[in-house]
Length: 271
Length: 262
Image (tube, rainbow over the protein chains, first blue to last red):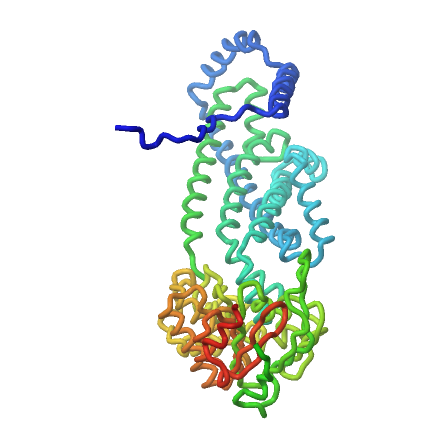
């Protein structure tokens, strides 16, 4: 049977030859990565020499110590409280900032640029730097950590809330404007309900992020279970450290699991 | 096609003027030519006007400009004998409150209930947090919203989410929302464009009944020439950036209107 698909045209190649610019960029990337590798201090010999230490520390972590279980549990609860309070206050403060930063609701382009700049600044400074700043400002303890989480949440949610508001279908807000509704009514009655799934997602991610951050913040004296972890590691009580790590693991898994359920439940609601 | 004065040819020429447009022009940024220019017409109260024309002739833009949802570049608009052009934001909102606007894509807020969406129609008259959701609204307003839903025969769907409605139902809820405004005039921008013929007829019938019952002025954009003939008193036709036709439906036919698209 003759080949019915035979064609007079030439079949194009499966992969085109890279352009000279693509080849140059690839070589440049390899050179850049080699340079970064040298700066990153990668050392196979150090890794091999460190293996016995890793094995010893891991051995000392088992079984986890329970002698300071209650104070540790107390610290885990403080960590959770910091995360909840920091996230909720951060969310509340993020919403008006996001409105001012959004293209479709900001009263003036200059206001939008200024608020976007503020949110970018807050987000760019690492949370550990904010934690050190607040520890020095208000003293050691959970308050410094909570302030850090508030600022961190504003940086995270301010940007994503603004983008969620910009992405909503412009039709219903236009319909509200045609009715004669005011700007706040339009935001509350049309934009926010339509952006709600995205806002809920972002808020729950912010909570999960805050729980993980609040552990690290304790390492610089900003309260919570991180402080306990730092003391355990510095005093070579690796068995206590493993207990703390397990507690953190349970807390993070619980928060992530609850937030997944809350996400599924809340996104199906009705106004 | 010869243009004629539709105000004279229309059924109720002695009524007060609902809308007056003089010398309206609009050019979009980066566009080489105006969408249209020098548009002038008057709409007496109670008249039903269809705006027709080919794609891209600026029918929807004209309707939006009449409420300054899109700002015209030049010209004057008077709505119920008040100057809309130049009105500051608060005054503009008050004037918009008297005009219900039904869009091609209903523009209901999808996650909210039907009753809440209808309640929002009264937003220019009664504002504030109590009116954001039907759950908190005063009983009187909730009852009136339900009454508006009854008029479009959808009261039984009051608690359903707006994104769980069919296209025809959504458009009727949008009409109920417009009625909630207690409007004197309704603008409708291709209200049946996304509906099947049956649902489209039902929506147009609803418009016809309600405008008759409440004595409302109606301006609607449509590609259905039969709808223009059946549901309007007067036809405005746009072509080549001008108002090319302004006539009573009594003097026109579907065939004569079709020449506008030639």
